Image (cartoon, rainbow, N blue to C red; front, side, top):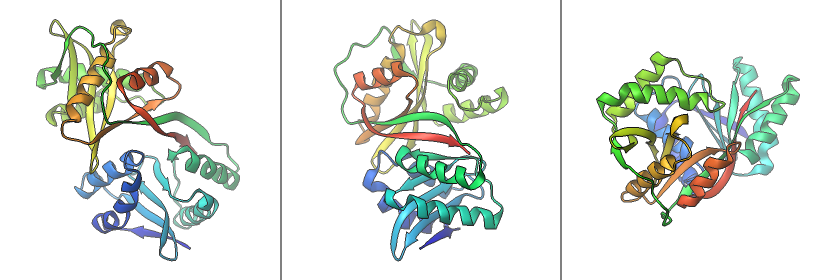
Length: 279
């Protein structure tokens, strides 16, 4: 049994993609991130598998300084997986900020880590991954969906900051938010819900996998909430994406029951629970 580190992203992709695609919706994050790594978007990614003989039991993807994304295929192996990763980090004097992945994998892994470090871990966010294959017949609010363009960059910047402030994620400085907003608008990935020409909500087409696509950055400013705008923009964007993809996925914050209810009304179905854990 051993932890195998890869420095060639294409070689790593060839090895792990068939395994990750077995549960494509659940693994949308490592799959989508791996595609971006292969284009050279991230420097010094950490790519590894845990294997016994020729059998791979876990896949790890990380783009420093972010969380280690953990995918485990055999939960009975979590203790051995944790031991192998612990020994590697000790040998390399590497400090991991945290884990993200299926709750059944990252929770026992975090408990193992806590025993080793003698420090408690902290659950940063309890999430649920949803999958959509067909849209329910729901009421759509007043307004229409439009693609954001250059004139909307300042608004998207403000709403990106609002989005991070509403979640346990680290708040994003305005300069970073503006850069990110400009990138997303240039990618034609941000969609606004407008009423009488005024933007009232947004959603984004994010990372793609082989057969699916993720929806994220769903945000409605406080003075426009409880009017169905968020549900409408997600429904219409998802409907558009299903024209060229077999399914859509999204992550929700389990501590926000309203958003979970709204997505299920649209037709999104739970796949698994996921956690972001600080070590």
